[in-house]
Amino acid sequence: MDYATLKSLKPSEFEDAADGYRATSDMASAAKSRIENQVAPGMRSSLEGKTLEAALKQLKALTENFHYTQTECGLVATALNGLAHDLASAKRKLDSAVSDAQAEKFTVNPDGSVTYPAAGEKTDGKLPEGGTAKGTADGTAADVYRQSANFNPNPNFGRAQEYANRIAIALQEATEADEKWAPKLRRLKADDDLTVSHRDWGDVQSDTRVVGTGAKEYLESAGGPPKDGTPQDNAKWWKGLSDQERDAYVALRPASVGALDGLPADVRDEANRTVLAEKRAQFQLELNSFPPMPMKYQPPTSGTTKKYREWVEKTGGEDRIEFLQESIKGMDAIQGRFDRTGSGKNPLPQAYLLGFDPKGAGDGRVIIANGNPDTADHTSVYVPGTKASLSNIDGDIGRSETLWGAASRKVPGQDVSTITWLDYDTPRSAIPFVDGDIDPEAAYPGRAEKAGPTLSQFMHGVQEAQGGPTASHTTLVGHSYGSTAIGEASKNGGLAADDVLVAGSPGMQVKHADDLDVQKGHVWAMGAPTLSDPVPLGGKLVGLGADWNVPTDDDFGANIMKTDSSSHSGYWDTSDRKPSLSLMNQASVIAGKYDEVKLD
Image (cartoon, rainbow, N blue to C red; front, top):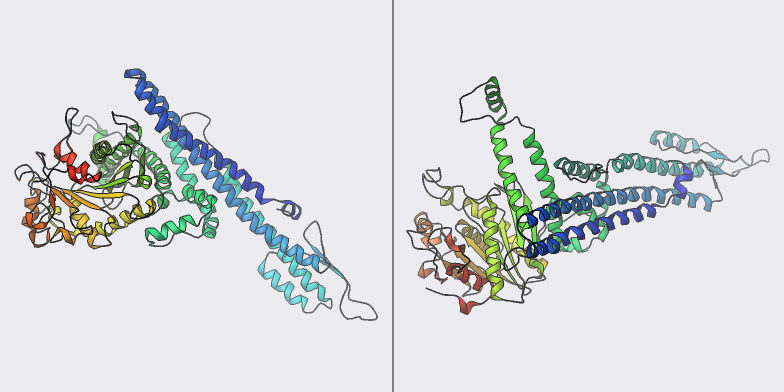
């Protein structure tokens, strides 16, 4: 970049362009949200059958277009801000050097050289002549010029050379910024069709990496999130950022932003939905790259089957295929929850994806809320147990939906948010031999012990985003081994909850309900008869409860609720005719209607 161009450059114009793209991104986001949360629910209430299916299919495609537009425009805005940041730095250096030179009555020429007047001690009645210094950005050359200034009789030479060098360095910095950002901005363009494909989302992921590499210094200038920060630390950092800086972090570090406890739910949701879309596309493209699956259960008919088996042995591809298929199944279940917004007799509220990672702590990380927990009057967090994973998250999401519906009916006019929290490595087996293990993983507290601090951190993050411990009535609901994780969270950071409710618990690693981090009288437990749900008995046998106590024991001290469940997983059963007693008891606790709980 030459002197005249940089001298007349206005980095603010790039920032103005970035604002325009950000505004477009915001409009696309608003349009996407309106379709998901208003238009689609309206269609469900006025249409039915194939007409409804066709309309929802078109709306889903339109939503995908808006989401893609939102994400790509966010990247363009961040890239333009990154370019403006780098050019502004170079411009400041240039303006400073020019100002200093002109203060000494030196002349800065159109090519960036600096002309200085005669000065120094006279020789034969003449002052040492003035001249023109041409700058260099090369460090070695600059050192040579600096040394030569010591021998130049005109003292202005050395100072003029320093100004010229500073100008040259600023010009080089601006040139490097232009060369760095020009190709990155050129690649930020969409296909010339209206279909957002998996490959398009794959490009978004690639674009994010490219822009992120260029914008590293720009992001660092804002200060990164606190390392191992508490939810309070994270919230303070986020609040201290400008809107522009927040947008940049969501655009370039969606996985990091989406995982930060203490940030607003809508921010985490936006970031995690981008991660979900990118991972869904990435996994599908990888799955498509594998050869067609052979007909395993039929005799080989050609060399293709043999070749495929050789390939499987060499690459371990079959395990990878299963992982991709199961992960996609779970991601589609999450998308299915988004698509159900506004459905049902008691229309489901907007869903918020508060955490997502297809690998996570074990078999995937999924944290999803029905309704915004930041503004809820009543909040519940459901912690699933053994065998819970991304691949079967649909069932656990369904339980939270059921809890939302039942609790909402208890408190008309009040906002309820029910969260499914899967962010720990759940045991894969609970019953010897039946689940494939002679010595079941659920017989040991190790996985719950690791889950405890993570769950505690999340609960405090919800509380921080809500505005404090009195902002919402909060209930922790644990099923099976999930209740063991809750007990460990109570001992490792606290629960940030008003009530604890467990169903089919094998033990909570504490001797008594009063040992849990809630007020006395606010621990609730239910367990089906042993023949229907043997898990509590199993917990007593292996000692997951301190002193072999489980929450449904009388001497544990919990409020023992009546249940009509006929199985270990039946505590959330319901029908159109009559919700189960187990479900209504849980809803009463979540809604704070303690007097409506039926006790044994």
